[in-house]
Length: 409
Image (tube, rainbow, N blue to C red; front, side, top):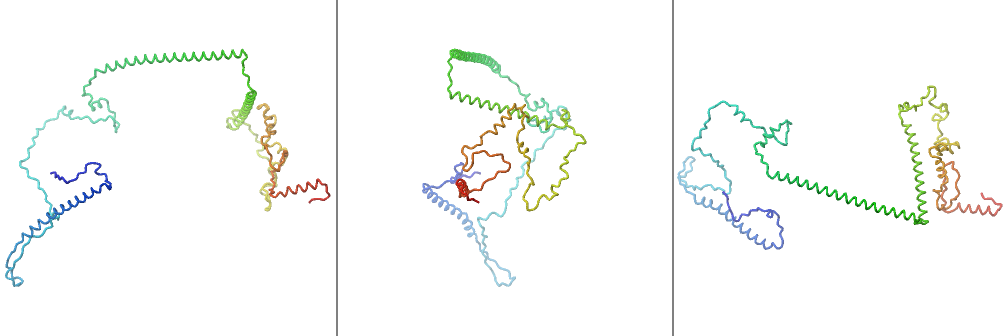
């Protein structure tokens, strides 16, 4: 049963669920809502009072007075008594205390009897009709079975459908053949036109080149050669010198790399390769593998090394002999002349005589004369902020120039 109420509000749209923001314009609507709300409250209150007051009035009217004679069991002395019989008050809003269950209704007529056919033997045709082909999927085969095509087609049911070929298929295939022939003709004509255009462009370029060559030959024959200015000639000669110098440096680098590759190649060879190439030098058994001059010396860790008050890490200089100092870090002469063609000596002289690291302006207090060879580490002078050393040197020079007999200690 469907109950209808004209005052019932049903929300069936999305805008009914969106919260509404109250503005000043809705003040009048709020007053109407308040009045309607009060009206609804009064109606609800009156309806509830009707529900509650009706049982109470019925209960008040149903009271009875009963007169009886009590027994004298407890010797009360009363001959008769009058009591008022009132029905027990029940709360009308109290939920029900008992649950009513509906009992199913009894059938009016008996059940219809089911009649079975008599048993009969199963034939082969019945067994074949009972065979239902399994569901074969075209996408899944989890067990990995090999399913023949006829089984797939039988499960698919395509064999039961009648194949009908549309009559327009022949027209469509014929139209495709005609379009293909026309397209081939168009492509051939386009390629032919492109080849002709390329040939014309090529002939045009050849004509331009011929004209330029003829013009150059005529100018050369007439002697009309533009003389280069002195600045352009100087720049050109300078570029040629730079190119020649770089070419020479590349040749030197290539020669050095070739020699280095040869040395490293022979050094990194395996002993089996050296033996196969005849490069391995076998030493004799009687040759000493160590230097006997290192034995029987009184120096070393056993000699005490040094006293405690001496702060010298080394007892003597590393290179004491002058020939060693002169030959250290200096290339040998006439060793690589065959490889470099004498360019190594020229490079060494160029490095020695170069003024690349000479400053344009010397520092104050330094001399421009070249220093001699150095056989010990460099020494630095202490700073003289007040100029006392310079003043002392000037006094000594003045005394020496005047030639006085006094001495300065």
